[in-house]
Length: 317
Image (cartoon, rainbow, N blue to C red):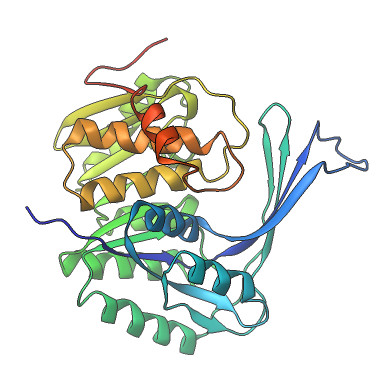
């Protein structure tokens, strides 16, 4: 089987992430931020950064506000990604993420730009032109004003019909509509999965049962991330489970995006299933030890990967 380094990441509703570290968040009061950063983000953008560091040839697309594209343009230049974003009127949103000393994260997510019919036509032309010479597409994140869950699902369905491998990572109504379009891989976390099935999921066994309910939709790969409790992957009726090593959590922001990047890269390189899940889980486990996404060093990555336990039965503590 041949490998490929070419991939498209789609971020329909990117954001500038304003991240601040506080000892403990005191609601209704003044909170002093110990350190902070403002950087280009959004789930698909995060995936693109990690994929690029792994060696992928990445094309990024979606919608960017014309008023403040500078940090995105700089990032795309830094990671050598081809910029195919559609520029639209307005400013890309700023999302605030407050990280407490115990690792808890509070997200304050603002609405994005409003996308017009002309913007949509330009994006569709770009997306399906890229489909002529790309097989892997990562569609990740929320939807901006003007993009309905059904429209997003129609893009997934068309890519599926073209034989493309679509990795879809979203939530709420976008996830619900997208599942019926048969993406090749989905990666809900346990909270998103619980919201989808409409009940609380507190154990790995309950997550496993909920994932089985999605298998009937014809999705080839169902991956459920459960934080420190590991990752479960259902493919062709076969389950794999991974348990990451214990780590000091600095921030969980971007860990799920990093997992998606690892899963995508592993498939692009035709890794065997167990090493692939071990690799992706280790990559994600490393992400929680830092602020932002990226690979600090290959030595650190390999050390963490080697500590990931992968097996065919549910891992219990």
